Image 1 (tube, one colour):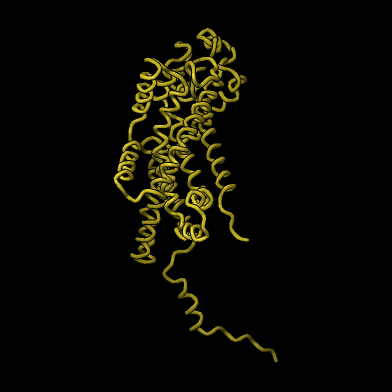
Image 2: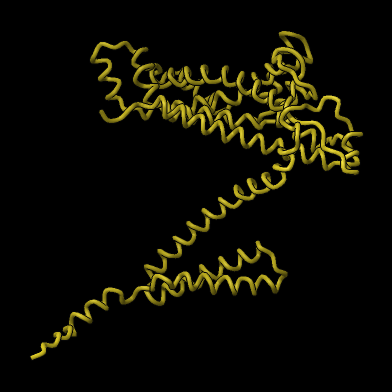
Length: 373
């Protein structure tokens, strides 16, 4: 006798299908996105097809269609949730587009100049409009940004050496020693004011200071470093202060309970615990000033030759090199070589900032407190 399989109870079948009732299929939004792209292309073609108009029309059609479809199938509450979710993702993409556009533009226009032989190993000393005019007939692009790279590194290193100790010690005083007295409130107020001052004011301050000490017209790389340190110190103080504040007081109290002095507690417990955030803050401060142009033009001038002495003579930097190559091309009639050098220097500047961030992460990982046994 052959046994037949018992049929599934109708109630169970209804119960299983009810689990997915009132929900959009997983592929529904992808279908809406595809249809929105087609309609967006059609709407963009009516006004003259452009990638920007296509993206705007597609996004609007998708958000409206997906929200209405969700409202129809899943109800008002889920539709509101989807609408806000679309807005969040849209805001993220809008914020990401300028970054992608900048990186793509700099790579597209800077890589040819960066790959030019001699760009990273030669300066602009002796390069005139004659050499740039020769590129119109197939001649090579001469000159490079070696002197500007050297100047940028020297000025930034000296500015960091000035700013980091001053900023870190100030933040330690505000967090560990100050008791919210008049001095600490005054320091906090002036730090807030310095955070928002224009960069050219810092350059004028450095020029005036060294003009009083060494005479008017003193322009050196060290003067530029002092000007940049005025911009760096508030950032270092603010970031370091916030990182020191989040160190648990229990760690300090445990150290004091063992008889460890306060200065040693700060150097061995507090700072190592907050070193990751402090390193990030210092990197942020360096990135804040490494691309400044106005204060360096005022304090260090511009040079076409290599200057390794930061205490004497004018000195070039990558921002001033870019500025002069765009504003005053080497050849007024053939500006393509100057533009190529400027975009290549901009790419070098971005690479330097990326390397600084990587170095900060490595430092933070090396000196961060070790977890586990």
